[in-house]
Image (tube, one colour):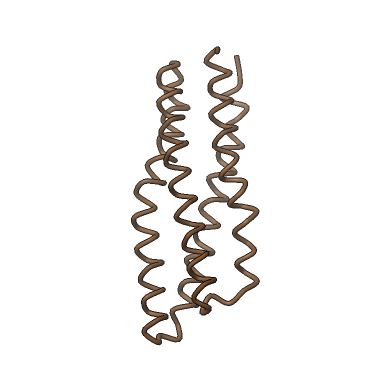
Length: 140
């Protein structure tokens, strides 16, 4: 494979989990997050998204660096770093709000909703950045 084909393949592979998350996460805006199974399902969706993005971005970074695409590798490596660090940070806050909900804190579902919105916003920003980078990566 040529370096351009590898770069495009990496970007397309990263687009799948980001696109799925973009389509799946707004459904949770239609339900109440004080319902425990719903909140646990939201937590599971975020956890799975972070794990898939971490694996895809780390493999993509290595593939780009091995093919000499240093700038693209740096960009995808940044996504990998956000997925690795962000998962720990984000999931801790989600777990805190789930525990607060179980303890009877009436404001915890609202804080969980704000986390949900922030997660969707960060994913959307990364998705836009990834899409904007395709013409620069795909050039010969």
